[in-house]
Structures are given as structure tokens and as C-alpha cells.
Length: 483
Image 1 (cartoon, one colour):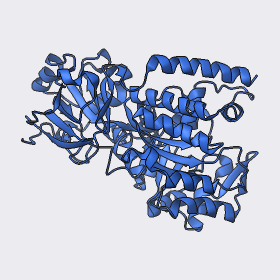
Image 2 (tube, one colour; image 1 turned 90 degrees about the horizontal axis):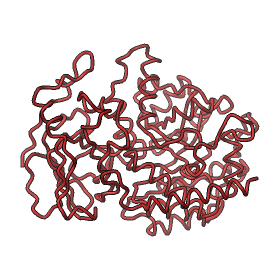
Image 3 (cartoon, rainbow, N blue to C red; image 1 turned 90 degrees about the vertical axis):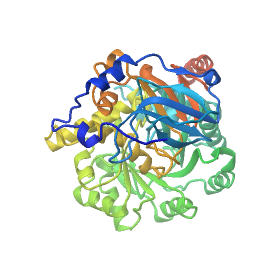
Image 4 (cartoon, one colour; image 1 turned 120 degrees about the vertical axis):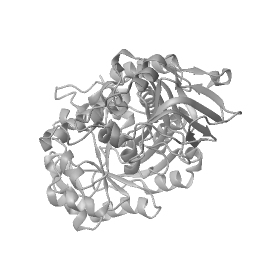
């Protein structure tokens, strides 16, 4: 096995940040863009060992080269080698000539239960996002929570997302949490499940500590060898009530935060996401609560001192520009966050507002905002933006040792992208092609934890027809019940 590489990134990207393909690359990319083929054993998508052969590999490892005509060897859920002419006689072979292999995308904040309410938010007072989800969320039982998670997972996989962060704030009973987790577990996705209070929970009422403790104690039922992990969806130290800021009682926020930190679990908190919530990061900094275990969601109006505090603490930030702009939160300070060296992740947030689970859409907006705010077309490159959707996203969830890039020892969370799609022609820098032009139909394979979950346009673990029927019936019933 050799590890020779062609087209190092520093030579591939010229001053205008555009890729000039060589004649050899064009021949590889166009002449070999045949359909992805599998050895016969791959038909059922179940194997302990795969050899993905002959691909252009975009590892997303910092500073790494783009690897042409390379193989990726997967065994027992993990990548064991990346190189040329790998010999693996027992592996199921995937002929990926003319395709790009890259890490799966990483979502860093998604209220999965709202996927069952996709596109229902409108511009009326009765059906604005907060009013509509509050009204219909009360109608959810455990079955609806599971169905919403399955629908979200199916959409995520179709779009090449292999990791999601389910910021679950519709847990109305322990059974609701189990329903959501059952959907995630059965889908095959990698996921962080952040246990949060409903929006209707009074700000002076703590989380159900006993329920959470039981869930944590029995986490082995859900973990699947670490594919699912647990965290806390914390409300922070400031609440917003009737568009005004209210201090959460010390005893309440301390008790909720203690649930996570006593167990060494990560914390995620919505902060500085509206005018009424301004100064939230500053207050947490004053209380010395920020840390590497904390993810800040939105931070659209974080001021310079708050951004500096986040940088000092090592906290990460999750941005959801589609929903932040649509709901009127504001413009996320992408340029300032990047200048401070803060790890950034991208977020679907809520399909009730943004529709499809298109994380590349969020990355394109993030790149556009970064360049606009910096008044510089070159401020954020396509590769930078793609890193936010892969490597940095995984780091923001504390999963950078597991996912977000392709390297031996990491979990096999990857996608295989065809390059002969009309939307991807002519060929250019792979990162630019993917960021700007990739569609779900162009994703031939999605693999999570070494298991193929999408193959040639079809989901392998989720029954799409049954899911569609369940979703349509359930959504109609929810609408009837809500009047």
C-alpha cells in the first residue's frame, strides 16, 4: 500500500481561488464517470468490511492533499487505510472511479421533532414559528416524536448528513424522550441527543432531574457503541418572556447545569439569539460558566467582549443563518467569530422554517455572510465553508476524534458523490463543486459507522413508502386535532 497524493491544496488553489484541472484530471473525471458499481456482496449494504476503490478523496484533514485514484478501506465501523492499490481480499468492493469520497456532513443543532411540522410556519400571527410549534407540539406523543426523528433522519441521509445534534425541547414525559431516541437509534445516524425543557416549561422550574438521571444511567440501551451520545439542552441564565429578558433563578440554572457537568456531559444553550436575549454570553462569562464543553447556539448579537470571552473559554458556536434571517433574529457575526478563532458549526435548526435538510445551503449563506461582512470575496473559501460543515462541526460537538474528516482510526462516516451529474459539470476544485452544486440525487452512497444507509438514491434502513404514509396521516391528524 502506498499513500502517494496528487494535487496538494496549496498548488491546487490559485490566487483567484479557482481550480484549473489538468488534462489527466479531466480524463479521470469525465472519462471514468460511469455508474458506481458494487461487488455482488454489496447488494444488501451489510458488511463488516468495504474497499471503496479509485476515488478522488477529499479528507478534510487540515492541510492535507486531495487524493486522486485512491482507495478507502473500512473494517469494523472504522477507516483502516487510505491509499493506492489497497489489497483487501475479504472486503466488499465499491468501484468509485469518477466519484468523490468525503466526510459526511455534520449538523450541529436541529430540533428534530419540528421536522414533522415542515413548512407550516408562515407570516401570520397564528402560524408564526413560535405560535405554531407551541400549539402543535402539545399534540405530540412518543409515536410522533419517533416519527419526526425518522423523517428528519431520512432527509438528513438523503442530503449527505451523517451526524445530527437533536436539540430536543419537546420532552413532555420520559416516553417522549424514548420515542425520539428510538427514531434516532433505528435510523442509523450518528447523533448527539441534548435533553431540554419544553418552551412551555416555566423559567423558574428546573429540568426533571430524576428522569434525566434514569436516562443517563440506562444510556447503554441507546448508545449503539457510541453512535448516539447524550448532552443537556440548557436554558442558560437568562430567559425571554413576552419579548423581555428575565433572570433565571440561580437555583434553577445551577441545578440544570449540574446535571451535565457532574456527569461530564456536553452543554448546548441558545444565547444572544434576539434583542431581548442580548448580553447572555456576557452574563455567563461573568459567572465563569463558559467552557470547552459548551456550545452557544445563534449568538447573532454577540458583541466584541462576548466574542472574546467565547474565544478565551474555548466554547463553540452553532449558526443557523436560514432560520436566523427568516425569523428576524439578525445577522450572525461570522467574520468576527472567525477572526477570534472560535470553532463554528452549521445548523438546520428547524424545517418548520427552513424546509429541506440542506446543510450546504447553510454553508453557502455562511460563506456569503463572511465575505459580505468582511467586504472581501476571498475572506472565506469554499474549502473553509465545507470545513464548517464537516471537521469544525464535529469539533463543536466534541466528536472531532470520531467524525468530520477521513483518516485511519476514525469512524467510517462518509459520502460518495458522482461527478457526472449535469449540475457538477464542468469539473473544478472538488470543494467548490460540492459546496455550490451538489444535490441529493448526486450522492450515491452515504455510510455511517461503516454501514451503508443510502445507496444509488435509495435509503437502505428506512422504508420510505411506509414513512411517507405515516407522515401524511399523522400530519393530517395533528392539523385536525389542533382545529
